[in-house]
Image (spheres, rainbow, N blue to C red):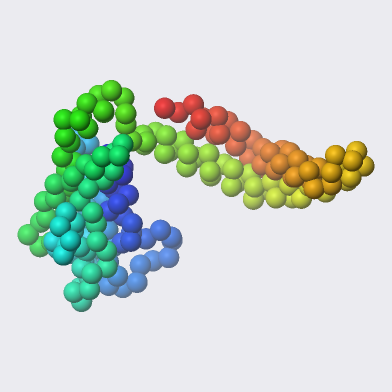
Length: 194
């Protein structure tokens, strides 16, 4: 729940790259409370104001322009879970608390949960290792595998295109694992993480 709401808060106002923010451009920092019950988002060079649409907050820059509208509800198993928002007096901080209905509490107790942070970390590590392996030779091995598959496919008369596709797939797997030997284990870790 907290991860989904944090993602909602960060979209549109956070910086997703290493370039320093433009002077005066709104930025946001979101943290989850120690007990996991609240998400606290603090804005720089912007403020939270009630949105024209009910059940939302608008983020307004220093010039009064709405730069983002944040919904005060997150989806959980085809249900909308409302978020109670407490905005600081100066509008720079919003504390969001999920308001769980009895049916949502029952589903959570039954084991229906949003994707875990542990699963997210395993996915990020898997993608990092695959990309690292690709950049360290996976792309070359894919090209070599495609060429070898093309030649073998044409000779064996399985089909040149089919042979090239199979060769490229085998080359990619071998090349990525040679480029980053931990890529295969990272994939297994992601699959096996609850």
